[in-house]
Image 1 (cartoon, rainbow, N blue to C red):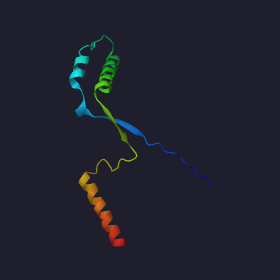
Image 2 (cartoon, helix red, strand yellow):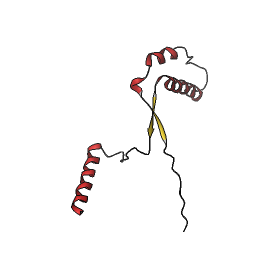
Image 3 (cartoon, rainbow, N blue to C red):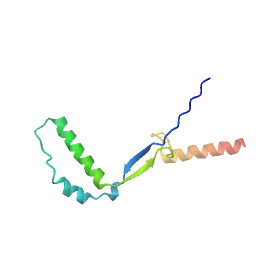
Image 4 (cartoon, rainbow, N blue to C red):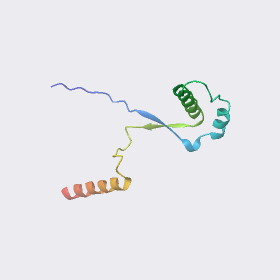
Length: 97
């Protein structure tokens, strides 16, 4: 029998805090960009996306979100349904004991 152990690093995801963004400064800086080019559509899109992402990184603060501590539930399950499942498990364990 072979046992393998892996040290799992908790992955941290950065999430933008949009309501704290400095959108006036973003608009002011975006006015300075040359948004038009004679390149093909793919190159134009990559240029646009690069500029927008840089503006977001510069003017919208981020927070770290630890993925390990985040409760996981299926995407289709609403919060109320998850609470009902939790109540059902509590009742089952209470009855079993």
